[in-house]
Image: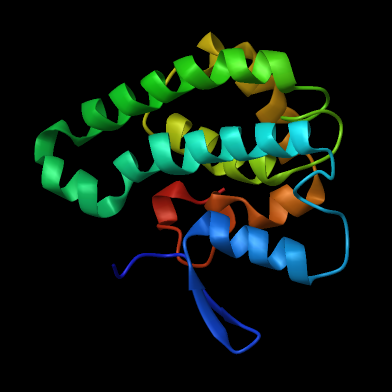
Length: 160
């Protein structure tokens, strides 16, 4: 589909964010992004899927280009709709992070989505759990260096 992310790792080419994240999680040492507990793992997947499939694709550059002058309103509508579903989920699952007190794939999905919300002038204050979690996450070094505003291909006007 000529979309990012796509990565070549271990001699294979993978695309789609969640597939890439899960492959790396399953094949590399270090803290796990998917909890061992099946309930927490299901919660992480539920939150990640909501963001990656239900909110984010509707703000892809290709979609926004098709929307023309209405692109900001389009993006805002679907971010708000998604955040209205996400906020009560996170109220139930959150500890220090999206699901309990360990960083998970859900956290990896949340930060760039909040960045998009801010970029499209969505009032994140209306979603206190999302806002609190994002504020906690963006203070962590791993999230600072990988933040969307700090990537080499980020347009100059969107850089941190």
